[in-house]
Image (cartoon, rainbow, N blue to C red; front, top):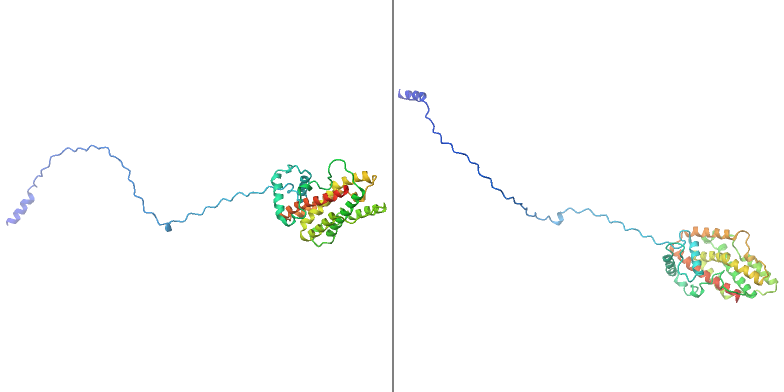
Length: 317
């Protein structure tokens, strides 16, 4: 049994020894300074415009609103604006009114815009430079002598004008005129009493002159076509008579009437209060008017003073 013996012998015999390799020294390599470089990435391909998300719309900043400069007296009402027109006409050498800020631009605007509002009236009744002083209550300075005949002609024309405006206000169906009915300012009946007294003194009463007839016709036509324009004449006729006409009446009374006070210059109550009431109503009414209507009132105010100035000249003719 040789195989069994060999197997037993291999199991008993020790394993052969292994030869170990000699140890070698381990050397660490010297580190060298490394140059750092920035890696640049190539640009990514552009996204098509259609794929881009739309930017949110930017809200446009509102432009600051520019407010036009007010006309002199505009904050109070159209009657106050017309008072500045009267002041300017009485001082023709002054081109502007300095009482309120912005008056210079406003005065210029009043002239241009008002003329655009009614160009059709420029040929008959536009304010001419030579008539700028022709406001009732302002005759030329210096000594002047009224004539009895001239003053009667002035009263006749005045009666026709007051008859016209008072008849329009009393009979018209325009709602704007209702506010001025029975105002206490009425003068037509008073002038009739004065003319009757002159007639008793043997003074002939003439027919109205061309000046008075032309003005009365103009007022009648204006009342039917434009209420704001007519009310400008209505107010300024009384305004001129109370503020300037009374002074004329006092001078005439002393010079040719031996101190007699005519009914034309008398009122049952304070005339200034009556005028203030009419002014307040006009200012309140003008709040509903456009700037174009107000400018037309300013232009018609100047025409009113022109017509009244021509009538006053009859006194010394």
